[in-house]
Amino acid sequence: LGATWHYTYDPAGRLVEETDVDGHRTRYAYDAAGQLVWSVNAAGQAVEYGYDAAGRLSWRRADPETATFGYDEQGRLVTAASPEATVAVSRDQQGR
Image (cartoon, rainbow, N blue to C red; front, top):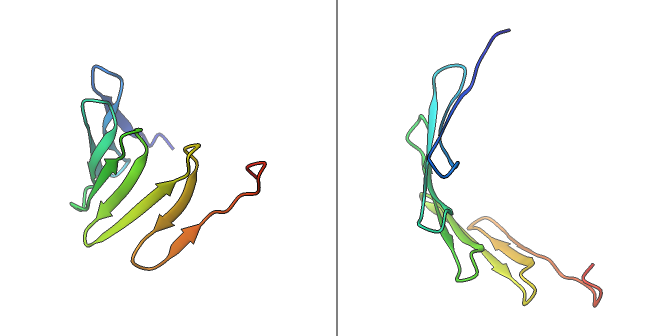
């Protein structure tokens, strides 16, 4: 009881650091558009994020692997692919 997590935010209100009850920190960085582009945990494991022109997540890299994401004309996620697997979403004409 009494365990506390600490959170630090930048002037725009974005989370830039969180510290867990054991003192392990995770840091976050953002681009000029305010999108998350990088995170690193206490073990030094970094994750990078990339976005398409519409601001949607298009890839996520956690060395050595990269996952990619694809969207349909309505901006709905339709594919997610990593070295281990690919998931494809199909919808009927009503978008279900």
